[in-house]
Length: 148
Ligand SMILES: CC(C)(COP(=O)(O)OP(=O)(O)OC[C@H]1O[C@@H](n2cnc3c(N)ncnc32)[C@H](O)[C@@H]1OP(=O)(O)O)[C@@H](O)C(=O)NCCC(=O)NCCS
Image 1 (cartoon, protein in one colour):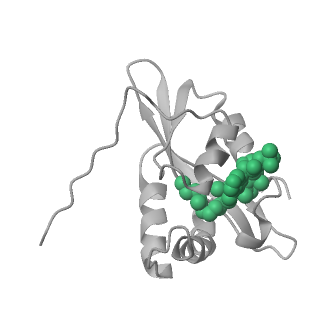
Image 2 (cartoon, helix red, strand yellow):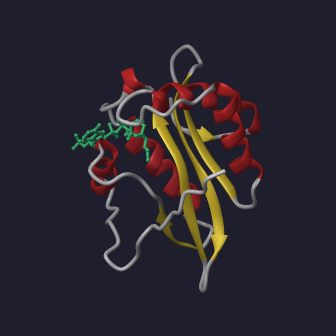
Image 3 (spheres, helix red, strand yellow):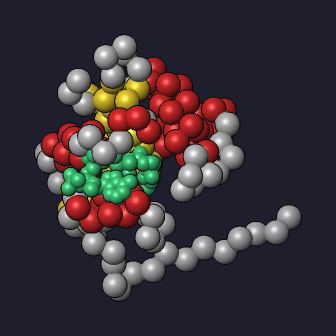
């Protein structure tokens, strides 16, 4: 099915898929459906939200992506926050189709670039490179863990 816009009513089903995919290797993060829903709801409620969704034959979520537009020095940037395709549908072109649908959605909104953060050397990195993303030489992603 052709990707369509991701609406608020889709978030719960997307969260279930998200928790399933990111609990599995190579991520192996201990997501629950509730925590996943909280994360996706956060992006949905944030300014500039844009998401795309693809449904399978039975109406189940086959894959989705989402993120937020943000103003920049000129035009806007789109920060792609989450993307996943159901395991049994991976490698069949659905992720690329979702991404192309996103670019069509962004085409009329003066967006100068799409950016994202992901692990180096993981399978998804090759996926993004095939779509034309390049790992920035000039920029770095910094984080500092906090102890409580
Ligand atoms: C990453 C992901 C979204 C890609 O979606 P997909 O539907 O499997 O990707 P596509 O079938 O459109 O693949 C497009 C290209 O990327 C490459 N690619 C996709 N997944 C790949 C993988 N796991 N390993 C290596 N290359 C991969 C393919 O070689 C393909 O190129 P080809 O058409 O020349 O063969 C999907 O695999 C996924 O959800 N993975 C688990 C969650 C995840 O890692 N999300 C991204 C976190 S930032």
